[in-house]
Length: 138
Image (cartoon, rainbow, N blue to C red):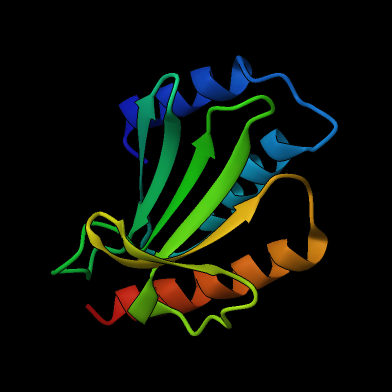
């Protein structure tokens, strides 16, 4: 992660009070999960009052700027939306929502987490692996 982006994430997380939904913990879980991957580029885009986006890319990617976007939606309480390009994962419709043009103008599959859900978190981890592998191919 770029030093500036890393500092912004740290400031954001330090100012985020945990709630019973454990959404801060979920965000940190996915951040750590992504950081454990080889050849990962992480960026952070803060839009206070709207979203805070952790974006992951692979250096081999040529056509796209990222392979996943972990958005913290500014609400009370905050919740997460994890979005992948639709063609980078094999997602059953029952688990994620198809969002036409939902990821930087391209079709996406998004998974919304409003509270800690172990099964959904494991599903998303599998899709993170899929998308990272797909991104590594260029």
